[in-house]
Amino acid sequence: RRRYLMAQTALELYNDEGDALLLNFGQKRLRSLVRSWLKRKCALEYRDRDRHRGAFQKRLHELQEAWHRRELSNFDYLTKLNELAGRSYNDLNQYP
View 1 (cartoon, rainbow, N blue to C red):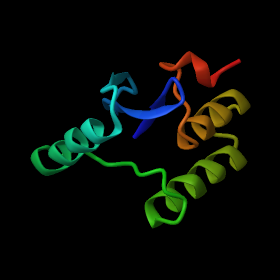
View 2 (view 1 turned 60 degrees about the horizontal axis):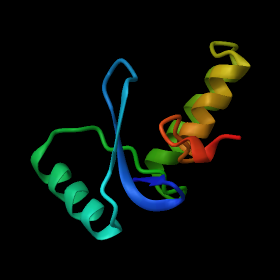
View 3 (view 1 turned 90 degrees about the vertical axis):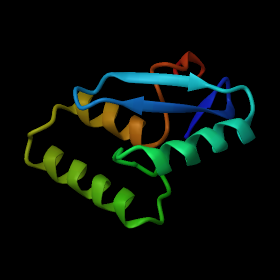
């Protein structure tokens, strides 16, 4: 799930190389229908940004540990934190 122009109407899909595809549906209901269909039909890794879910907490912890071990630069760490927070380079409203 992604915001586009500050509205919850978009999906952002990533491939294994980290390339992103942002799809804006214009309506939250349509986005939800497409998202549900994709989850049923495709064997995609689903990354939920819900901070109360275990997958989010695990990803955040792994990211922090990699940064502490100096496996990530400060820039890469902040970029990935922004991604986890729901920001996207594809929506320029989210960056100054």
